[in-house]
Image (cartoon, rainbow, N blue to C red; front, side, top):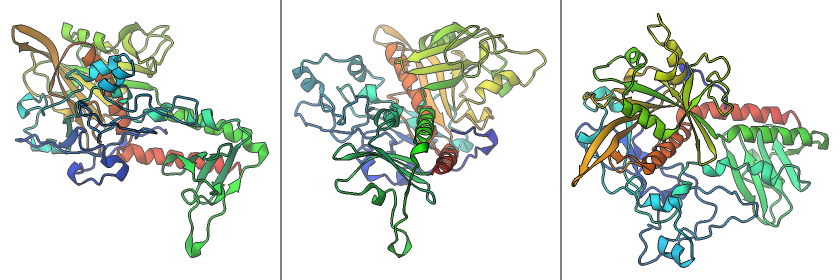
Length: 480
């Protein structure tokens, strides 16, 4: 994706999620997924949002009278990680009873799905929110609230948005095969890539607007495939061109490079610490000394690493000369996603820099920001104080203990606030409080990744992505 100028980001009005049209294939998913609404100062209501979760390649639901899985809500996305031409689900989204009958041990994700961080039965009350909702000017922000249906399946391991797009589909199924054919319309810039070795032809359709994975119907000539090359005026079809054999190797190399660029497995998230009584952005970025609860929180999300000599994803931090601090926090999540945290108190605090530009330079360019409130802080946090146009999603976290009978549980209040035009993303909050533990850590990391992925679908980021995609197709058309 091309670099985005911070000034290009424009905050437009938030659409009413109750009026958003739901695509037919997503309609079955909206009934039990959480919601995002305009802030209402007195009442917190449930709403049914649209979703951008991809449907699995094959979903077969076998209803069971004892099942707690609601058959109308396959809120997951499967990655075609198997090399076979057909992708199937071994237990077909059955409940835990059916899984047990197949002698399958419950996975860790299945255990997590039984915990409160993934099973939601009530919506948090306004008194539980840790962000200011009294100011009418906050109405342009939206809050991620709502519920998901009770599940006793292992679907939670597929809860990363668009996880199927992490699979190198072109490189695995098309590159280097003699049976792969390329058709392109230089006018519309539609590129159709087809594997002709099978009865039902697997294909990729790349357009300036979007990329699609599809199957060419039986008996249809790829050069006359309506979805790629539709009829024009006077019922004339645009005639696609094929690529010269001498350019195929270069074409394959470019397509693989473009695909690798689109597979995002590296993330950077900003973290700031807010003390009691602080109301200005420069005060937040001036904090060097933090409470023990803050460092315990950071240790739960990642591992403290020394930047000098660090050879994994550094997210712009200096790993040679130490110009961006000595330490930071890093996490390799699920062995797949590399996450670097831009922790403001660990970034250089230069004397005489009243605006703390060195710290803002990193945190201000992060799409998702964690705002950790000191336990002593009483006043709510106003996300508008952070002036960066690039910051789109805010996780407001504050330590809080909760009495459960005779046991005092340590945990955190969690509130997720987004700027306009950002859709809701899973996993959804059960209440504004969650106890410490692995369930909380896994919830946070999934939620952070999905926050950035869903933000890429808002108006500004989507427009930039389409412009980049168009320029890529223009360059490919030069090889015709």
